[in-house]
Amino acid sequence: MGEYVGATLSIPLFNRLQTITSIRKAKNNYRIAQETYKQKQLELEKLSREAWQDWQGYLKQTVQMVEKVEADSIAYQLTKRQFEEGLSTAIDLRTTSAQLLNSKATLLQCQLMAMVKEQLVRYYRGEAIWTE
Image (tube, rainbow, N blue to C red):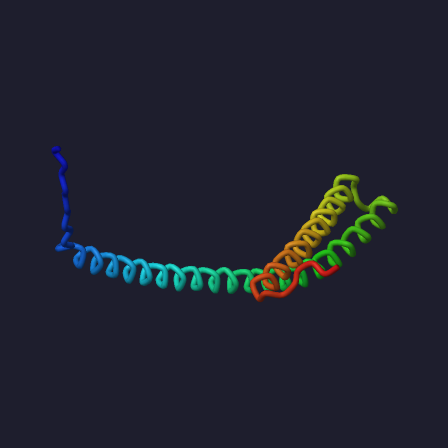
């Protein structure tokens, strides 16, 4: 009748080494994740400081540009008055007009950048940027 009976025996000789290796890999991955997390936190703090410093810089520059716009406006009014009385040329009037317009454009740019940096600082602090 030719019937066979078979049995297998499995002895895990090297399973312990695999477990130890897996534990070591998990510990190393955990340490790497911790270091990566710390690095990202430092980068975020750096970006936050830079945004705050940029914001303060743009606020100071805005104050300076307000004064420059006032000075250029006075210079334009003076040149315009001189032109009306024939004491100045059209080129001088156009030059002072261009300086005034450039000053106003730079002032607007500084004000907008200050607003953007302020919102960025608020974002880094975790505050709501858009309120509805």
